[in-house]
Image (tube, rainbow, N blue to C red; front, side):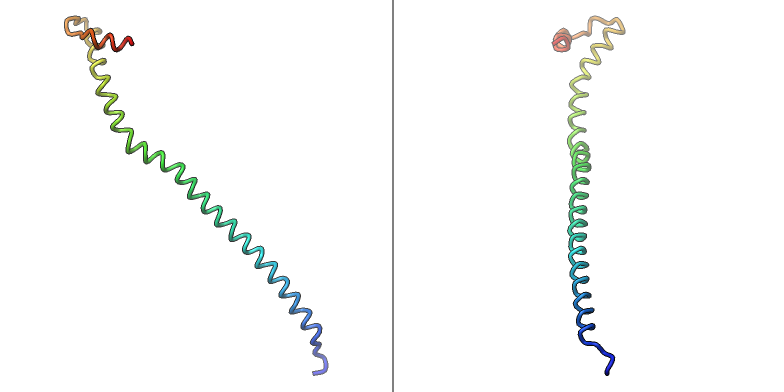
Length: 98
């Protein structure tokens, strides 16, 4: 094997090893970048979905309580609009004016 040059082969292998190291470093950077993107996407999803879920859980009882507390006021207003003054509760009107 006269034409085979071991020095050239060793140089090519070393160059290949250097390129492989650079590719590995870039691959690790990309892997870390993708990991952080996934983490941020999960956080973004939590920030969007969590308030919606909490609103679905906690708002209906609050709205029901609010409607019940104002139903007496609405009845008084309906009585005033119909002209029926005998059924008006003065305490409810005082609370309305506060």
